[in-house]
Image 1 (tube, one colour):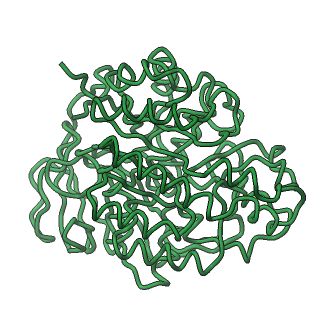
Image 2: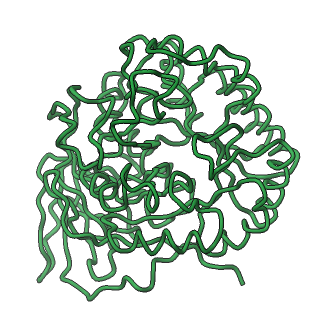
Length: 459
């Protein structure tokens, strides 16, 4: 279904074998040796642990470190071009590589121009190609007036289309009114595409108390759970009517999980993601004035978080992705009504989720499913997301029992502002591998070798 950028081919290299006592395969962890054709960038076999190394091949013995499939993060705001002071393809993909992410999908907004036309997609591809440390795909955008652009964007490589149901925060990416949402979704359903939606109801938020001042409780009250629930219910009804495929972005309200589960039982094609900050941070612990914790929808209470974890365990949530949405430090003013909303966590998603998951009795096999296999399946990247023959040789090597304290100044994000600063997390990423080549070693990225992912145009 997808192909790699034809401009990014490379010469063959010797074969490689990675050996670990804990290889995270689709069937669970096992001691194994993973054979890699570096020339093709593919896994050729998953073999018994003590398999002899083929003549001419290089052995990378990982000992007790865990070999995970490289993470696939389908929700990243790179902001490049146009707002590169906030982030950029170079800094974002260095952070991704340092954090075990081998593929990311860039959101269509916060860049200028937004990815709402084919020429805008080509501008973004040209910028990304120069500095990609990991493989990159692109979302298109569904905005008022661009319904005729959606099929061409799909054929040009966009993996799906993002829409807002309320103001996005940037004027160049306006929200869809109900009739415009219907028009866009009907068009996308016509070519079998995917609509991904920031689902909060504008009417309910307009009627909530305004978010002014430094108190986090006031900001939380301004984005009630009911706004998410109402928007998701409406999206499900429209998807059922149009037989369309939809995806709920960054689920914060656990109240919506029964709506989604019921819709799936009735055959509605709806999937849902949540984010590390909703699984690891709680409203009760956010200090007043600490707008590095501001995001929309918001971080909610601990009791809500518990239900999100139960939804993950039950398979009601399909994947966990970062929603990395950085900005310059000056935009994180101490007033929750005025500060930019977004959590910077691209480099920290794996250890943040693993720290919370292990405390709740989950395994790294679960984490791999949520953060690699699930996101890859969402966008049809059938060569990503698992350690098995035929897949790309993308890996994250993790020391799961080692801890570190987050030093924001040491992150590769362009702006070292993060809600995780000072937290002690489990899980040190030893190295990251992309198609059989090491792209980060002990947190230090190597030269950029990432490729751009393209959808095969339909005949």
